[in-house]
Image (cartoon, helix red, strand yellow):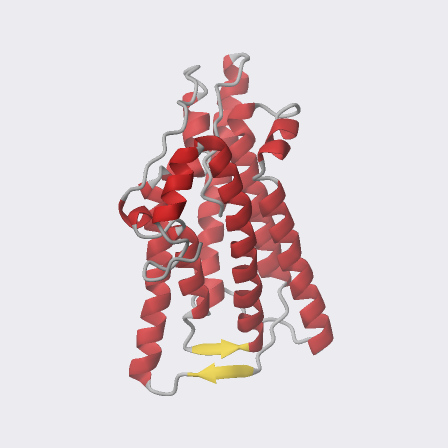
Length: 258
């Protein structure tokens, strides 16, 4: 998910419409929770009925084409709908209070489609033979997910996923203007959420060809997303964010990337 937080003023209209928007935001958030929990199982191959290396077999060419198409669909949806110009156009047709929830719901549904239609590519690229090493790598992946969730709460989890906006709406309260903050992880890297995803995707005790394709393409998407998001953040916070970008590395605290 993008770390840029949307500004969603209260929706005008009667109480029924505002309550409907609140329910819509709740459904979008619950869909997101289900999707992100399924994503953990999908990548790690635990609990879920269909994981990254399971499902109906297909030819390698079909698997590559379908999987790339699914990831491209998510990448386009996730990046385009997060842009300020799209939000400006989109909120001519939907209330501003549900703009973020709509984005979250669309992203979740696109990911669920990916999980459903993903074609396994089970050829093993590497495999940690020693149980201790396999456990260590699996634990590192879990740490990545912890970084993801912790980072969202550091910057206002409920606003990031649209609940804050729809909760303010029934009371007729407008969302406050965004304030630039750098709590905890954000003092060491500019994008800890994305760092957490990269760790979670690449730390695999057994890396299949399909998992490698998933990790490589999503990592490329992350770097493109960072470029677009930082442009938006500079537009929102100006010199304050430029100074932050000069002082704090993009993803890895021990190496300045830009």
